[in-house]
Picture 1 (tube, rainbow, N blue to C red):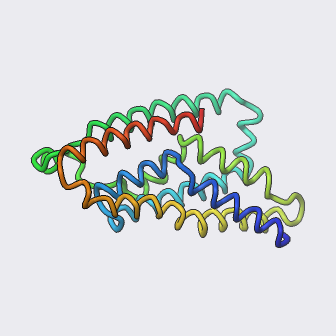
Picture 2: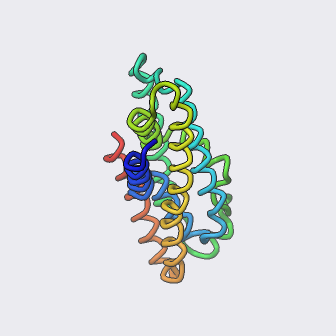
Length: 200
């Protein structure tokens, strides 16, 4: 893979991972609720999940979407349903100390939950299909180019998504009152739902 193609791949990986989407909205909310450090497993899970999609696409599973386009429609329906449920849960999250302490979910997503979410994340599938379709080299350099794609998304993707969790963690102080927490929850719920416009 020549230098110009590597630069293009790096640029695509950065833009794809740093722009708003389901993962980044979830990390923003996680950073605000649990802090940056406790959100690290979630971030690691996203990187692992996206890498898994890239590898499966490189191995040919992505070709199923071309053979059976209805599979992508099913994926979209599942992704939309989950995101709407997630948006509702975020918007109606606890806001006062008693509710926060009594809620059943007092933890951010675990790494495997973040990884599995990528299976129904249409944006992640679009990144995998677009990157493999655009940047993989046919023939003897296919494996080499595939490794470059997976590596680029892991190396560039992690700090890119980390920005969202870090911003969330920084605004924790501002979320010191129930009213502000309610406003934040409603805003994050709406923003999570709004990512549907990017993937539908």
